[in-house]
Image 1 (tube, rainbow, N blue to C red):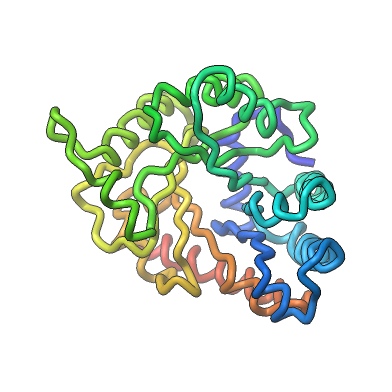
Image 2: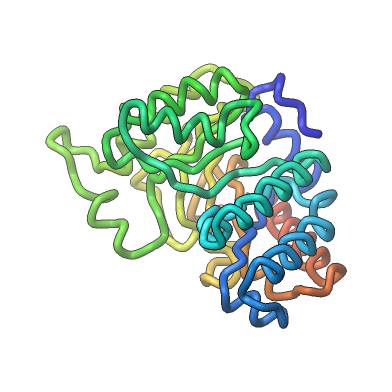
Length: 282
């Protein structure tokens, strides 16, 4: 079981240093279930999830279940997700719940309690959140994450093309919205060692990001490695001096090797080694 008496940033740093800097997404979408020869129902979901957990829980630093693919099956799907989160954490993995929640006031507080309260059935080491009702709307999640030793990953510079119309929009002060989010996170993490617990989601497929200050003293969750076109060797060029704090996320690049457990494990370990080598050479 991962120890939550330490802040998420410290636990993440240790997990990355010992198991390798990699996050594996758990995305049981219908096409992947079909590719594994599984039915698109609760039985297929359970078999898929159990296979991934059993194959990788002892080997990978971070796991990112996509909540939507479990929610679509209703309460039985949520039960599968609850068990997966508990088993991954019991094996020493860190769980980033990819739920991208964002709201205001008591609703944001309720979302935070769902995923960040220590005794919650879906308690996760970190949660993805959307700041586009204003960064201040995330305050309940920030406060509960600090209290619980958990973390947040805030959408800042996402890899989907549509994101640019919001994230690269320029404010009256001359800064883009994405840069403003990065600035807020740097303030949250100031003075924290070995790094802070409040990270940003920054796409690995975005190319040169030299115009953005990614040195937020916190983790950078980087989707896009593997099936989306980026590779580990690209990371130093994209993230510059902040590359050591990058947590690359691979989903299909690993999951397509299932349902064979050894093949899943080999793929994950290979990606982790590639990232480690790329970071070491930066």
